[in-house]
Image 1: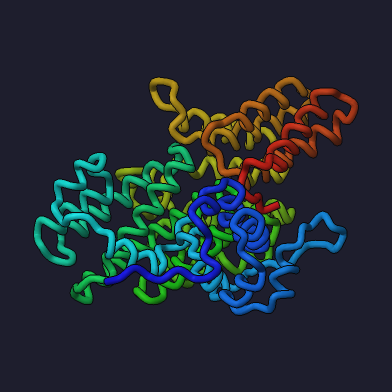
Image 2: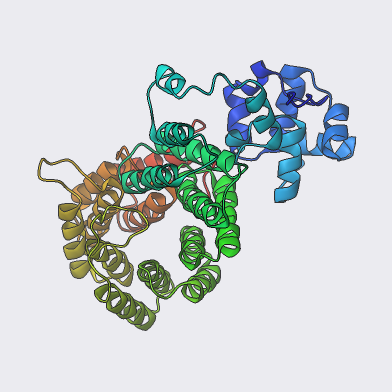
Length: 450
């Protein structure tokens, strides 16, 4: 098979490798990509317009700097048009949070080295996905049982690493998994094997959505979530569909879209009634109700979630991101009670969360939960007049190595509000506020959903 021919608007390698270009692609700010393509790649707007099917004037509007006084520039948001732009500019799919594009697969096929399994080891050792490839090649078939099992084990390892693993590293490994599974779906297989691979892709898209959102890649996370939901529909997999709705509920919660969150919770319950995802859905409903000031709905939701949790067996691997463990219930109640102003209960649950999140050797095994627990203790301290404790806990939370920025900032802003309203003249309050602003405005971070 010959390599796919480049388009007139294809980005040269030196442009694709630029950090500003990659950041714009990751944020799906294609207007900025167009501007940088002309600036650094000498690709005219006319060529881009011809390649993507837009008028030259519209490309110019999208590429216009937002500092010229004409307001926000138009953005491409339709999934179909995003794919067209990615293909026209020959942008590798993984840079935009997508699976490999057809032209990439053609290129990889045409440049593929020897099929000798030993070459994988020579190229750096067998990783999660290389093991599956070795097993597949050993059987000399498109896919087989051991390879499928290896893929599932790889996904399980990634989901169990989610609470503590570096977000960038986890994103890379998850993306590699999606590329591998997508490639296997093109081979010959039985209907059962095809469904198993679809389900594997669904779980990887779910995990990818979570990691992308943690990193501030809001639009890419939405695409991954939507892909998981479509796969859940196609494969008839209610649990994947329910987790996709749970992720939508989480997105809506951190963006203060209360009705959207309630709708997502109901859709998730409709998709699945038997797995632990239902516990998480009730928890999200309680957290939203607390922010809306509905104490009765908070307690009803917590009671329903606790009852669902008590009916489930205790998991063998409670750290798995898509399995709700009983210990996490303290985290949910902590959040709800803090928002209801029940500081004594909130602080008690926060201390329990920190204790459970710390291993015997003092290492934090759930740093994201522990960070939000410290913020809760900070809020409680601020309300009783201990500004030193409040700022100390808040600062420690913001300095956590592994964090979910949207969730962390949601609670950090609550502490910031308490500090500024109670201690507006204190330098410590102003310093904490500036620290939060620095995080949200950091140009080196991906786009934040605020």
